[in-house]
Image (tube, rainbow, N blue to C red; front, side, top):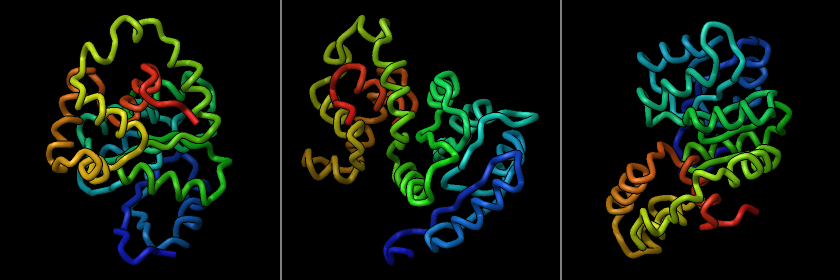
Length: 222
C-alpha cells in the first residue's frame, strides 16, 4: 500500500490504554509507508522519548496521567518544532479542541474515525498541512471565527501584499513547493515569508495560520 516515492513516516503512539496502542499498531502495520518507532502511556514519557529518538508524527491522546496531551504538545512545539502532533482522542468538547490547537497540534481526529481517514490525517500533517475532521472543523469555525479581538485590525494592516498571498495559500493547504511555483519565487523565500508572517501575527504553526486566515475571511471553510 505504499507509493514508491513516498518516504517512511516515523510515528510515536501516545495513549494510556495499551489496547488502543495495539489497535493502532495493527491498523498502521498494513501500510508500509509508516513505521511505529515507539509508544508512550503519558505525555511525559512521550517527551522523554523524543529527547533520545526521532518521530515525524505523534498520535496524541489528551486525557492521560502524569502529563496530559495538551501539556505535552506545548513542550513538543517548543522543543521539537519539526515534530507534527495529531490529536487522536474520544473528546469532541470545544475546550479540548481549542486548547490542543493552541498548544500546537496541527490535526485533530476522533477515535471513531475510519482507518482511511486516519491515514489521510497522518499524511496531511506530515506534509506540513492541517487536518481536522468535519465535526472538529465546525467546532473551530463556531468558536474561533467570531472572536472580537481578531477584528480589531485588518490583515492588510499587518502583512504585506506578498505575505497575504503566501498566508492564503498556506491556509488552503498548499506546500512550500507549490506556493513557490505559483508565485514564481524560491522555496527558501516562501519559508522566509512564513517565518515573518508567524512572527508578525505571533502565531506558531500552520493550524493557527489557517484559523487566522478563516477569521479574516482570506479563505472560506468548505
